[in-house]
Length: 178
Image 1: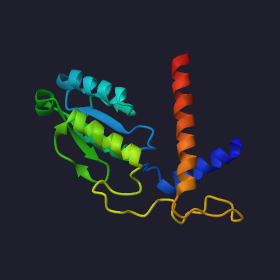
Image 2 (image 1 turned 135 degrees about the vertical axis):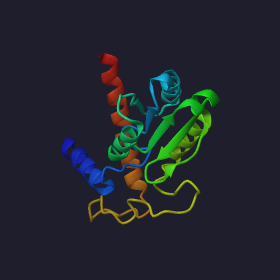
Image 3 (image 1 turned 90 degrees about the vertical axis):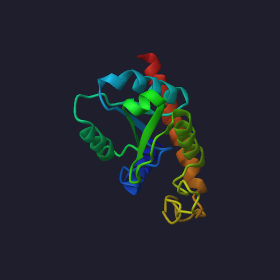
Image 4 (image 1 turned 60 degrees about the vertical axis):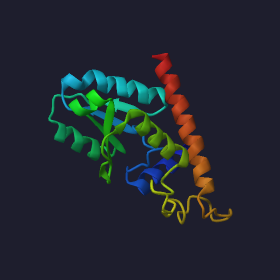
């Protein structure tokens, strides 16, 4: 059984080439304060996102902002949140979505709701404007040929939901033990 899970993750990683949709990404949001002056609000935003159930990391390194944005893109993190003077003063965030670029400043709560909605809707199925996009498992043969295939991806989604739930519980369990 363990080998099956490992093979499934291998297929999943290969299929997405590491560009996981928001709902599956190990880190969904990376918070990037422009400088140390804005670290307090960056941490506050991170705490709010974590409290909302998002997987978030803070990158408060000494490198220039452009370098940290590029690192987030190379790490294939779905969202990078830029926090500078305007954002700290207005209590907003400026998200950049991988592949889509800058989304413009928005209230933190609105951003959290956006990401939560993408997670719930598993938006690998449709882009954010609701236009249909081919399901990633629509023609992918993840199931034995002798079993009926579900071309709409329901079986793959069900397996992914179970695996993500298992990994989330397992990760939470390990963090509580430490």
